[in-house]
Amino acid sequence: MLAAISLHIYRYRKYLVLTLVISLIAIPIADVLVIQRDRNRNEMYGEAFWIYGFGVYTMNDTYLAESMEGLGFPYNDGEHVLPEYLGGVEYEYPVFGLIFFAIATWLFPGAGELQPLWLNFLLVLVFNLNLVLLSILLKEKLQNKQWARMFFAGYFVYGLIMSAGGGKLEPLVDCLLLMSLVLWQEKQHGKAMFTLGLSVQTKVYSVVVFPIFFLINPVSSVYFIGSLFVSVIPSFFGASFESLISHFLNTSTYSVYIVNSMFPGLLWGTPDLSVDPISYYWWPPAAIPIFIYAFFMLLTIRPYLPTRKDLEGKSIRQKFLELKYLYLYLLPGILFVFRWVMPWYLYWLAPVVVLFEKDEHASGYMKEMVVVGFLYTFGLICNWPYFSGDPGPLRDFVAHFPLGEGTVLGVVLIVILAGLTYVLWKWEFDRRDRKMELMREAEARGELII
Image 1 (cartoon, rainbow, N blue to C red):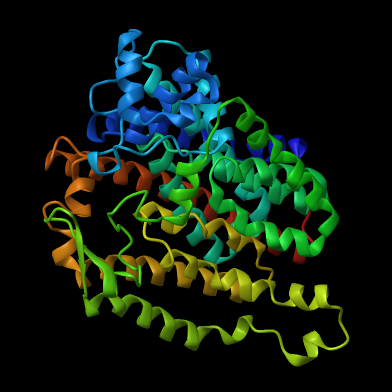
Image 2: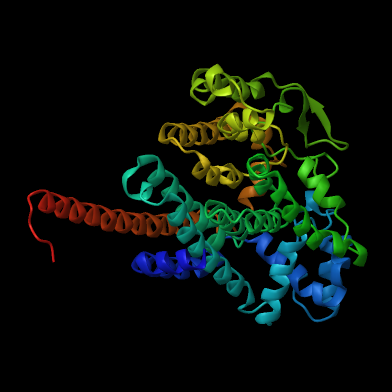
């Protein structure tokens, strides 16, 4: 894997330098435009780890910010804690994510100064490595398949926002996930399972790949289970994962807010946030997204179903393996299950597209992701009174942009930079394709190419 990474870094060095430059320009711009609560919060907990150890898992944001202020850390400013409606939530990120930020803050001390930008920079480096890993996984498809270019372009924008613009953990989760896929591609199943376990212990969503790995090589799951000791051992030193479980299950104990506009529960349980205690009411239009999605799936699912011939004479495990593409195609439906789905969650499941062997399957999966994104937006309109209310999810989300209308100009600038980068990438790819085509034509004519 290291040899492949080195080779692809050299091969795409011009693109990576360009991406890095764009990312470094975007970091200070985004730092002014957006209150990056997740990054700020992880910075605070990373510093607190060296003081309280794994006991930080038993502390909520407000309590920890006040405690750290007494020790001289400038975290009690309202921007290092979750919003009020999540104020009682204790730290919920898995252990490997906490360790990453703890080491990052140890390497670059100086809370409240350049340390936040340092965290963005580290995540930008990880994001660039992710682009390299994707180029390894996609191979020549990146040059000649439309779906691969669509996915790569989408991931570029998503990764740039998550790293330079948001300081979130997603680039690290994806890095470990993509590493595990590369290792699996190289038949290093044990290492792939161990790396996947670390990814799951950074954020849980990458666990969706585990069933595929398990069916192909059940014995390798021992390494996945072994990696879980990264989380098990800290539990003996004060770590508690109640908030993580509550967050994962998205129960009302985590938050009474429902931010997933596709959640079917909004049909009979849309919260009325203007009253205390909060009540719930029926809102039939909330069911429209799930009906549209079900209809879309009925029209498109057939190519992913195995035929009877595919299943004949095979063991139970092999029959389940024949269902893997159906399983992958059904994955985006998970997003309808949870109460808490922020807009960027929609691209969490996009990297599994590399597991499809047929181009028609991969292309169909990317179309499904577009449909789900449309339904998320359409769901906001279907339940506009709730989402735009005061208080309401949209108002709380907009509050993360302190410059108000001025934020639009900054976002436009970042989009222009990202778009310019993609155009340059595409131009270079097309130029290389034209060159290779000319060489093939010359060889076909019997000409010597030097």
